[in-house]
Amino acid sequence: RRPGSRSRHRSTTRSFAEGLGWLGVVVGEVKERRRGGEFLPLEDHRRSGHQQGGGAPAEPHRAEAERITAALVEALYDPAEGMFLAWDARQDRSLRVRTVGGLVPLVLPGLDRAVVDALVATLTGPSFRPERAGVRGVPSFDLTDPSHDPQRYWRGPTWLNMTWLVARGLARHGYADLAGALEDDIVTLVDGAGLREYFHPVAGTGHGTDRFSWSAALLIDVLVQSRPAEA
Image (cartoon, rainbow, N blue to C red; front, side, top):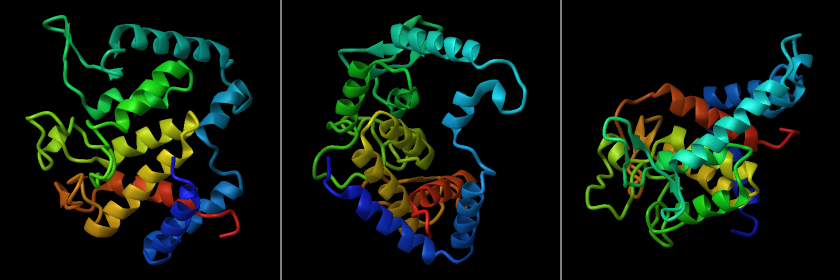
């Protein structure tokens, strides 16, 4: 954990938003609408269930979510790897490679604490965020694998959508400082290379499509979440 990292994160994103021109205006507008109740956090919708619009009770959906979470852990979680692994349905076997997809189940609210802590240990280990390596975001593919390529689509670059999902999961399970560090990385990558499709995880260079819409959307989300209520 990084003492005080969240306060530094807020300062970084706030100053960045103020320098973005039109995007800074969008961030301010979204923030204002959230304060006015036009946008509800996802968890508020989940908790409120049928009270938000007269739909069916939420309990069956919660029960189904718990069932799916348990099945996911049973079928794809590998304790020895400390993460989830993809499954080859044709050959009926696990694919023994580490990808960022194996960390994304952190977003699940009902994940067992031991699984959460193992995923965080894998995330912060040599495969994804080794100490003093200058890695930004969560690389899409194991840094220690010989086939890792930091500029080859899903074979190594950092994608903002996957980094954002992992950050959301970390925050949900109490790892606020680490979540803040990943959100800092989202801002830093865009600040340095623009709204690119994906990024070199160490050099920070942008690759793929430019003006990529989900990179813009997720940047806005990070900036909105980070700005203080009085802003």
